[in-house]
Structure formats: structure tokens, C-alpha cells
Amino acid sequence: MATKLGSVASERPNILYIMSDQHSRRVAGCYGDPVARTPNLDRLAARGVRFDNAYCPSPICVPSRMSAFTGQYPYEQRCWTLQDHLGSDRPTWMHALGAAGYRPTLIGRMHSVGPDQMHGFCERLGGDAGPNWPGAPTQSLGPLAWAQGPGPTSLQRSGAGRSGYQTVDEETAALACDWLAAKGDEGAETRNPFCLMVGFLLPHCPFVADPRDYAVFDGKVPPPSQPAPDPEHPWLARWRKDCGLEKTAVEDMARARTAYYALVMRMDRLIGQVLDALAKAGLGDNTLIVYCSDHGEQIGEHGHWWKNTFYEDSVAVPLILSWPGRVPEAAARGQVTNLMDIGATLIDAAGAPALPASHGRSLLRICKTPAPRWDNVTFSEYVTDATANWCGSEPTRQRMIRKGRYKLIFIDGYEPMLFDLETDPEEANDLAGVPELADIRSHLTAEVLEDWDPVKIAQEVRNREREKAILHEWASQTRPDQRHVRRLDPAESWLEPPVVK
Image (cartoon, rainbow, N blue to C red; front, side, top):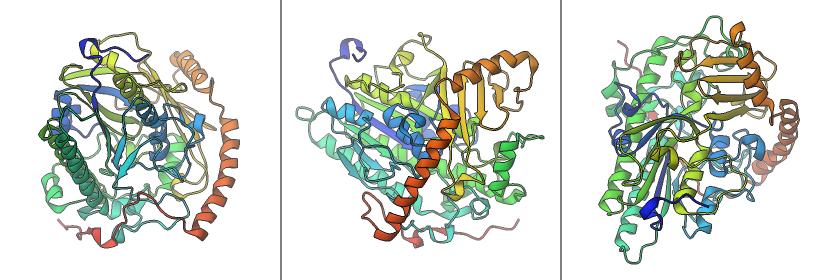
């Protein structure tokens, strides 16, 4: 049964769920960054609860998002990579809310692969920037081609300009504002509670920002606080080499970091438009608002960029929850949480049927009680095959456990990594080889492997890779129809020449 919410238990809330793509938790004013300009996220945090130890189920888009929808870890639904499908028979929190009488609507990014582009949403407006099917023609970012993923081009083609992703997000925000205005016009007497998810692409690379936004941060963004460790863990060193990060120009990194801060500011501005539209429509008083990102962005910390690792900047995410009169204001919670908990929270607030196989836990009791009984443990996994260039030179099977103050990273075929995040929040010291912590390392490793078999997963990934090869060739030959894809015009993306100083 859903948790009762006191005297307002019978008043089901409106739900506004905003998810960005690749937002580093550290780059936000409400998380302590003195340079970032995020006034709208800051005001949302001032009106609600900020979660300081939230994690994604996987440090890449598709498996993280699909697990956030179902509450199941990637290995449980065989959805590990950017080309894996989530089965349509997996119930999601959207299905649960639909079963409770809501009509979940999505505007903007979802990043689902395969024929099911709804997964429980009843209505979808706008669309994604990528194809439904691996093997179908990819969209073009014009001069920013290959700047949206791991590789040196991403840093070299950075700076002031414009990405088609920003155009898509501006359209998404406008659609969301119009949708909320229409809801407000329905009238309180006839309007049913709504559920709206708004998906933004920003601040995902390309690291290219509107020149006016870029100018706000030019010369103000400091270099990374953490250099690459020396010596570096061998898997991370291999990944750095695969990404072409061994000899990265300082000026490229500075431009990319500056643009990233500008992209975060632009995203925050679009979120502000949506929040203002909610208030203008008179819908704010009983609306549960959630903001999060699907994973982080390393922006040069520890010498790494993008995601794909279990450093905090990659696997930790911003998470803010606001619900006027129902949760505290200007509060922070340090419990270990996961994006999978959001679905359970929405189900709880809506009085919807729980998902039987979900690991998600409602965050409402954390919001209401600063120190409830809460198991401070969560997992995240990163598993690749050999189907795409972003996978690196060899497939990998990795799983992270965060339990209390410690984080252990299991990397199949390599020594693990171990960090004490209480004394070393910047993860400067790998403690896996410290004799005094041998028992902690052993216990955490056992928990990682208790229900997660890397040998079995490796075989499943190889089998799935052969299956996907057929689907890939099918899509390339038959060119199936694309649903909910916003066509990109290459002319929407452009880059100003770097300024020589």
C-alpha cells in the first residue's frame, strides 16, 4: 500500500518530473558551486529537499533511464548498453500511474531504443535527437559531428556557437509551457491530476554554447580540482587512451569546461520557463516536482571527460524534490539514494500500485524524517560489448557499490578500487590495497557478486551482441519508420573559431 500523507492523503498530486542529460552534480549553485549560475534549480532546492548522495543505475544514458523507469538494475532486464532494448512487458512507474488513473505524458527526450517509444506514457510530444533503431541513419550535427561523445573531437570542437541540441530543448520547453497552460485552462472543477515528464538533452556535449552564454563564463571557470592519479588504475588508463585523452590541449579543456557551465545555465533557464508556466497556470500548490539527471559529467576531473566511469562526477547525480506543504523546504538529505527511487516516490505519492520487482524506495519518508530507518546502500553497473566506438578497445563488466561511507568499484579482470567518501570526497586516494581495509574490501566485493555474475553476464552480452547484429543490419537495410524523433538540420549547429589570446 502507498504511504499515507496525513490530512492530504486523499488529494493526489500533480506530478512534474524533469530530467536532464549529463549534468554534473557539482555544477549547480545549490550544490555549492560558486561559479555556476542555476537560479531556478536553486529556488527549487530552496522550496524542497536536495539529495546529496544520489546515484544513477548506470553511468550511461539508456540503461540508466530504463532502470529509472522500472526500478530494476540493468542486469535484471538485459539492458546494459546504448543499443539495448527494454522489453515492452516490463512495467514502469508510468504504467503504475496509468493504472491509478493518471495519463502520463512525456515531452522531449526519452532515449529508448527499439519499437517501444512509450513504455507506459499515454501521450508524447516533441522527440529525441537520435534514431529509434541502431543501424538506422544517425542525425547530423553538421560541423559538430562526432563532438557529442567520447573522443578528442569533443574537446577540440568546443567553445562558443550553437548545437542543435539547444534548439530541440528550446522547443521542448515551449511545448511543456503550452501543455501546462492548457492544463490550467481546464478549470479546477473538471481537471484531473496530471503527470508530465519533461526530458532535456542539455547539458550533454557537444561542449558548444550560445556565444552570449559562453561570454558569461569566459575566463571564470577554474581548471579541474583533481588531476589524473599517478599511477592510474590500469582500466582507467586504458579508457583514457581509448578516448584520446593522453595529450589533451589545455586550451581545448578550458573552452570545453567554459561551454559546459554555459550549457548548464541555459538548461537551468529552460527549466525556469517550465516552473514559471506551472505557477502561472495556478498548478503549483499541489504539484510534486522532481529534478534529476540521468548521469553525470566529469568535465576533466581526474583527467576524464564524459561519463563511463564510477568516479562521483560520472555516477553521482543531482536530485531535488519539491512538494509544497508536504515536504520540508531548504532541506538536505545525505542518505544513499538512486534514480530508481524516484519511480517508487511517484507511485507512493499517487497511491498507485507498487512495481513488484522494483528496488526503488519512496523518498517521501526521508523527506519527512531526517533520520528514518534507511539502508544506505545502492549499486550501479557499467557493461559494454564491442558494437560501437564508445565501448573502447575491449568489453568491460563493472559494478559499483556505495555503502555508507565506502564505495567499491569491481572491474572484472582487474583489481578493484575503494574510496572512503567521508574522508576523501574528491576520490584522490584509492584504498583497495590498504591492509587495514582488507575486510571492508572483501565484504563489499562479496555484496557486489552476490547476485551479479560477471562470467554469466559476459556470455549474455555476447549472445545479445549477435542478436543486435541482425537488428542493426535489418534497420540499415529496411529503414524502418522513426517515431518521436525530432529531425535535426545540420545548419542548426555551428561553431565560432577559437579566440587566440
